[in-house]
Length: 277
Image (cartoon, rainbow, N blue to C red):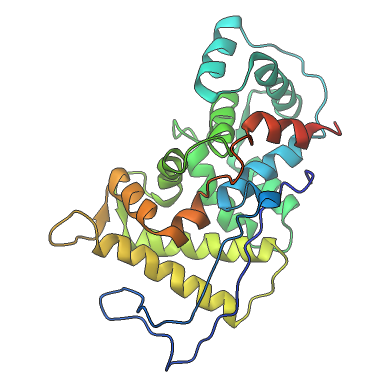
């Protein structure tokens, strides 16, 4: 794995006492609640959150790659440079590594899932990877070509804003791909994300795990309840999803945290994780 690139989710003590912790009927968490859940944002964990986990996983896999047998055209290189923020050299390096492992020029769903299962053998990586694959597969071809791969990777970089990351994350939640997020989709995906996140950190399922999932689901339902729809509906558009997540510190830090160090860039993360190639 890359050097200290893996994010971590730190749980402070969670008190499940019914007398001190409760959630009201309208889906909001009472102010007297003592359940406290935090996402680590220390400088040594600059790429924390689930998107950091995605990017770190791919960087770890591609460290082993060597020279490729094809090249990008100059026009393709310029377009990807403009779209991703990577410089020309970085784009060409990633292309070499991608084609070395996927000479056909694309990654299948099965290959994508196998990457996660090999990286996180003790977690339910398959369920998680199936949802993440949907966001990378922008053209819905059931494959990920180099362009889709690099764009997805760049979005998970620390240099991007929380808003951009959340716009991409909407596709992870939108299971049927119709552009509208339902409560059922939200509950299913947030459950998978939190369980994967904790088990990938080496945590065994326990009462804290269930409490964190419970709070995450409640936060997601609050986004529906507090949406601009009047009265609230069971569907969210991408803009409503992003707006709601940005207003919920817990959810926004879990899904797409901002880096604590302004000098942290995708270039830094890329270099540090490929340094031993």
